[in-house]
Length: 314
Figure (cartoon, helix red, strand yellow):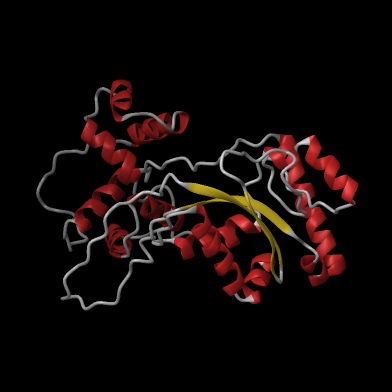
């Protein structure tokens, strides 16, 4: 329902109200057009009164003095909108070359204030998924939920997770770990930028809802290959998906959960176990690999059983 007849001062009062609510000129114009129809106040007039009220004007009536007519027309606004929609990366210089009769400042105001466009970065993703990748992700998720619906928590309790992570001799503490409770008048503390040490060892961990089952450390100078170990739930790293690994799992009769290639879904080791381990190791410094191994083993035994169960359920 629209209001067919209305005084201009009434519409301006509505604009002033919407400006006070911090609505954009573009949103206000759409509201006015919806309520009062097309013929009462055009886009240029709405934007003009929005600008007046933003600058402190309180009068909703016409000024008695004459003003220089605005050079911003609906046609210009439409041309700018079409140009931006055709090329989202259009620069202001390129737009100015397309509409040379308008100043750059007016074009910039048209883009940002009148049309409400803002520059936003694209969201980074690790891999552009193909149709097959997305199909595999759906299939893997569907299989997981079907098995959970059938067996419930017993299915979760049957999962054994295996993965590898580097553990450095020194891992700097995080910014959150350096937080201290102080008064606002207390002198500030300093935190120097440090980097992870070059010396590190590879730890392979296997765990379930009750805790750590096995921790294996890779000897210095060796690398993870297809024959390094097995697990029931692991990511899609090359050693995990190699034919040698698959054949070994088949020979054991193990039930391997599907983790599709290039999936952004992390296995529990990445988002739960290793994150907590690295946080625990933050700020601690070790001289030898044996000291690192001792610290990791000690941490794994001290963590409560509920920690592992929570990681599986999450």
